Image (cartoon, rainbow, N blue to C red):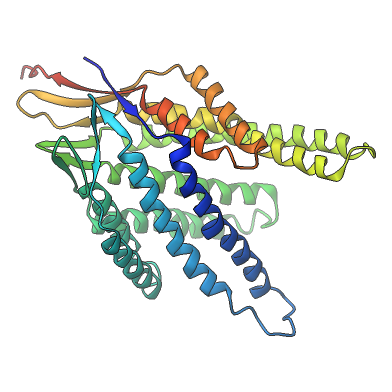
Length: 359
């Protein structure tokens, strides 16, 4: 029997967090980019090189994790299953200490500590979440994530990159499109592999005696992700061209105000990026939901699935993104809550009786 999730978060509840995020993260982030431009500028200003980039970077980094805390709590405690709400018991001071320590150790170890920092983050959120008085626990290890990130980067960049470039350097001009495409393919393959392996590592959660994992195979899953991304990139290039043509035609109209031209440019740009990425997200979400399963305990197994209408969900998601764009982000809290709510309310969990296979 399918038991669907329920999601109760309202846009008005998310609005205060979004407003705080705008003033405490987005605006300082914009200032940080300006300081970075000064830092790398070829000509040093009269006042000397920028001294504010690193303070801005530290502030923005801490703010990002603080907002992750509040958003995760808002989302998780808004999920209901069989009429029972998820419960979050997070210690804010412990979290802040973990963030400051993790950022500091990641910085002084030049990123080596990052896998253990990510592990601690996952443990904090998973261990602090419970359902029906039973806590979840996270089983992923930092050492395994370290090898996932290290080997993926080493194989893709050091082995493939160096060998490929050294062999083909004499026959292919470094500025030629073919050479650049080879490099881009390596980068995309690396990113897709890291994303999949990291996500596979993250879905390692225990609830009671059930250990919930992904049952996907590496090459099949990576191929599915790559196909969706390639389709999205192709369509983005197509719609970017159409956007450029449209803006050019409007720009030539002298009677059209500059503010209107900029507004249309922003709307078309956001629309372009959301055209297929929304569908790619839905298709990838469905694939991983269907491959999330637990071990078998007393002949029973937990499975998940998503049975929403992909085309209808795409149109709904696209509408929410468009409303966010034309309201310059004001509508985002409602768009977020409605998109997440639509996806989760069409996601189901079942406890199936598994028949032992004959040997």
